[in-house]
Image 1: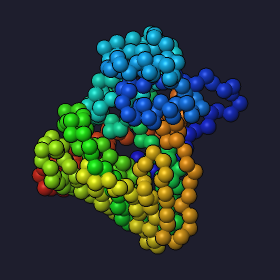
Image 2: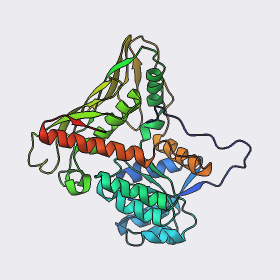
Image 3: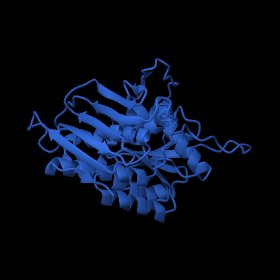
Image 4: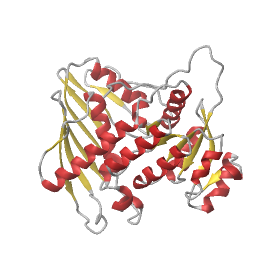
Length: 349
């Protein structure tokens, strides 16, 4: 795995400014409404060109707010007609986890590049189907790992890579929140594929991978439930450990039980450094035990990741967050669930 994180690539010098790429948003839930669509207005190389929704009542407001014409409104049954819309270059998948393969494959068959929210899917087989569909269409597939473009995370990665405080030996990370509505899709295994590990625990996995510069080679996990009614289908909390071939280990926790659980810390030979909070959409704060600054500019993380993907497409460069990365992380999470079921350490090839 490449151990680098980067802000968006510059477009090729000397070329005329290219036309912004058209994005179609698939799924108009809270994330699309409150984060992604507003972020598109801040991008340099993207624009909102179409929407796909299964809720017709949402359409008038979106059309009015973003000037979307009738011909650029689709539902899940008509999504294949994106192939007829030359204004759409990229399809951003923002549906529940277990629908990502369905929608990615439709987008790829329509000849569109795909940016898919994390986690990539709920099984490794579906991840492979997504990769294969995009390759068959000669289109790029990127996973929405926004923190890989967030400057505080990039700076933390630099400190680890350049060994400013010595070799990193241990990593500690946690992310969670108190989940509300007991009827929401995140608590349905068929749609979510799991509980907080799939939803927000993946951020700690990604953070550990960035700092370690590798994928884990062995994992162990333990789940807990204090409310077996609300959490009938998915775990309430999980504590888990990731082991890396370079000797680094990461101890992590994720939960749907409490708020304010949001940090990542690296323990090195000559000190510690970290982020608290680590995974917010904004307001991330860095620190170092030697009291040197771990400062970085505030950005719109979604605008930055979309501009990076657009730049990759415009310049015919591979994305730094490909489907293969998402596949590896889903494999890691499936191994953690296996460990929690069996009580054993699970090794990864």
